[in-house]
Structures are given as structure tokens and as C-alpha cells.
Amino acid sequence: MASERQIEDLKIILEEKKEQILSNINGSRNNIDELKGQEINDDLDYAELVSDSFTEGMIANHQLDELEQIEAALKRIKDGDYGNCDMCGITIPIGRLKAKPFARYCTECRQAYENEQSKKSS
Image (cartoon, rainbow, N blue to C red; front, side, top):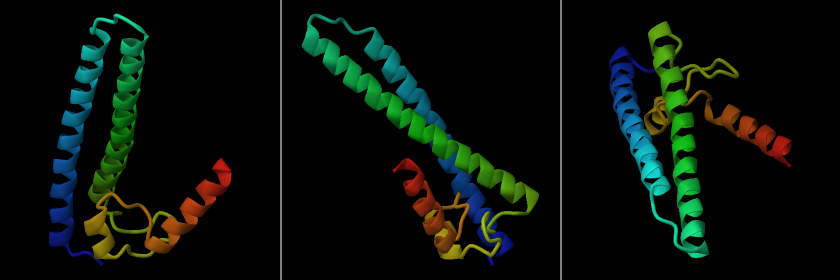
């Protein structure tokens, strides 16, 4: 189980990552706004604009998802539930939390969850 000091260190990492993501999302929004203001002279310009806008949107959506996971982890820290697997309840190893501080599942449950998700999308 993670010590209070380790949890505090991970909380700091989560908060820093949250700020970085918020900054990145704002940057993506600004980039999309700039793309919308570009002059379109032909089909190639239009295709490039659509592609760039799509890419920026996908990046922002991925980061919004990560932001939600970080905020959930910070809430678990506040509630005293941080570091326990959401599926089986065992303590998530500190090495896994250091690698992915917003992890919700232990390695075994993460694999089971991903297998179920891949079956659903097939």
C-alpha cells in the first residue's frame, strides 16, 4: 500500500498533469479557432483544414478523457479511496500508480476490462 507521502507525491503529479492538460486543451481550441479563420483557396486547402481541425479535435478529446480520469483520481485521494482497484478492491501496486497515477484498476483487472471493451467493439 502506498504511504501518505507517496500519495501526496502522486497528488502533486496529478495536479501538475491537470494544469498541463488544461493548457493543452486551451491551445488546441485556439489552434482550431485559427484554422477556422484561414483562407480557403481550393480543395487542397479545404482538405488540409478539415484534416488539421479533425486532428486537433481528436487530441483535445483524448486530453479531456485523461483530465476526467485525473479529476476522478484526485477525488479518490480526497475521499481516501485512492490506490484501490475499482473492480476487485485490492491495493494497486505503487509501481503501477507511479507509471499511471490515475489508474483505476490493478494490472489483472485492467487486462480483463480491456478484453471486454475489445469484445464490445468487435
